[in-house]
Length: 236
Picture (cartoon, helix red, strand yellow):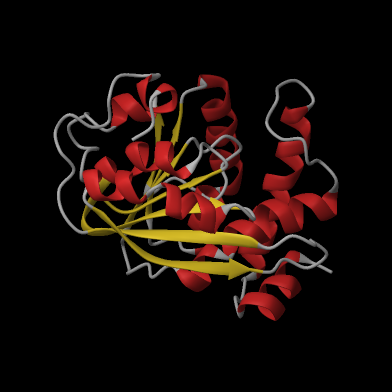
C-alpha cells in the first residue's frame, strides 16, 4: 500500500498529490545518501514508508498543532519526525536540530528538491547548548524527539526549549510507561507535567509505539540543561 492510503486508513490523514510526490523524493534521497553516510538502518521501501514516514505522521493525530506553531525536532537525524510533519503541515515553523553537520546537509538537499523553503530552519547544535541559546530557549510550542535518549535524560534536552504551555513529546517504544515513571523527578525539576501517553499501532509492526506528552507548566531553571555529557552521565 502507498503512504497516502496507509495514512488515510490508519490516521485519517489525507495527503495531496504534491505531498505524496515530496515523500517519494525524500525516500529516494534517503536511500541514495545512506549509501555514503549513516542515516538509517531501514532502507527498504516498506520500512521507510511505515517505520519512518507513517510513524512520523502519527504525531499529527495525537499532538495538537495550532496553525503556524513553532516545532523543533531535537536530534533529527534523517529528519524524523520533523520533516514529514513539515511536508504534511506547511504552515508549521519547523527547526531541524542535529549535532552532525552532514545530516543537516542531507536534510537541506531534501528540502531543496521538494521545494520546502519557507518556515524551515536547520540548527547545527547539541541539545545541551541549544537550550541556552537566545532565540531557542523557551521558544517552541512543540519540542519533539525520536530515539535520542531515555526520558529522564531526554527531558533535560527538551523542556528548556519549550514555551510555558507548550509540549515536549518523546516518541518511544515499549519502555514508554516505565521511562515516564522514572522521569517524574526530572519533570518536577524542569517545570514539566505528564500530559498523557498515547499508543500508536503501525501496520505490520508487532510492537506498539508510544508518544509521551509532557506539558511545560513552569519555566525551566536557568541551570538546565547542564553541560554536554552531564545529563546522560548523571540523569536527574
